Figure (cartoon, rainbow, N blue to C red):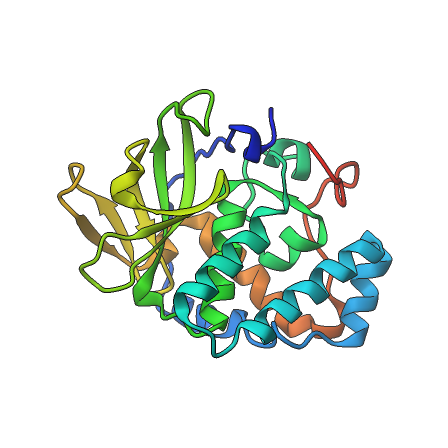
Length: 253
């Protein structure tokens, strides 16, 4: 599998699973707390488990958040997109030893790798921390056609940013650094989208979305948010769970 920046994308096998109660909303509201200020003990553990470069990546993330606070929203969007697009693309099978795994942003950066949903999730939570409201963002599962950025059709995931509620969204995509309007991404056909507030299934192309309610219906999303909450609760004893020791910290596909 090629690197995502070299015309590829992770294969997703997304299923809408069991319905989760409203407590999910509380998890989402808490899980990003403290991102901009990591404890020395946490940083030492990241360094011990993944090396000095992993610690620097977390510190770079902290610096990005602190520097971008108060900036114009469009500038923040570009900065965050470029920051995470430099992380290595690695398939879940190779990186985590399983068919599908949605990493937390800390897992994504500490291990320096992930696939398309990991880029989208990390961008989403970072932008939330920087004050971009949920209403302006949706993590979007799409069918990606063969294009200048992709050798073969793939299931793919991107982050859609809406400058205004009724605006054509801008697409933050790990395949390219340019942030283009969805109207210029004819290679992407939306299937469903979600954020911390809801879950929507796409109607016919260009006909909008139908609401399905709580995003907790997506098992991978719910499990990932629980792990983020556990990271926050553990605080100074952070550890990554479920990784493949043969690939954690891997610096290239």
